[in-house]
Image (tube, rainbow, N blue to C red):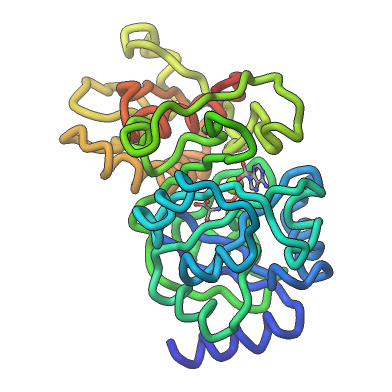
Length: 317
Ligand code: TXA
Ligand code: MG
């Protein structure tokens, strides 16, 4: 692995893009201080330039060196959760290029909890701009194999750090406003953060892009259409024959062509870890439709449901 890290450093220093593991999902990384390298990232992902990318650092003090006017509650969350699946949107210094923050004065920062990537960033001595390693709007990858299938011919290196243990993306909190804004439900539940720093606000779905950029209704989308149902009894057997199902717990799933159970024992942690991988497998199964049952709207369940709704293309948040 030391060799792979050395190779990654060499490529990143040349302005190339490499895939990196994190605890949430795989990222497509470029030197965050090199605008051209970041531009290449947007190009590869086919991502609109109005959707800012997260800056990944190896420790909180590296983050703070790129930030000005750090609010106390943000410092508190950083100390509490980093390294971990929390992204803080903070006022950036000029050293972070504008392309990273889509021209906004605020950039998203996080310290990922993966030993390979932490070592890579520390040794490189520069932060990494890294969106999830999928084409824009597609399913996020939680294994090196999933990245390989999408970007094999387009990037020179995928650092394989095994399957991502958390499985859904970081929670994004923005300190552009008071109270802070919850921009993305993610791996750390809203309730937990509110216990630490008080209430968060959630911007309305149609807010201006500079308040909540990148909150597009359709996202994480498989190529097979996804339909949310409220109970299995809605789906007659003839409709099940060419359909897949994603759900959890113990249901009678007779008749579906492919069935993916996120967690038999109804563990939200297990469901999150399985979610994108199972969605990806369904997408590859030669079916005409994916039916989805939502999970309870609490903790990680809320974050998983948001992703199911976005896969189905329904407006959310
Ligand atoms: O878990 C994660 O956060 C993964 C891993 C690779 O770290 N990354 C990830 O990046 O999910 P991406 O680019 O797929 O999603 C980043 C989200 C987007 O919704 C983006 O709009 C938001 O964070 N974001 C990033 N910078 C922002 C900023 N300056 N202001 C507002 N939102 C921002
Ligand atoms: Mg993404």
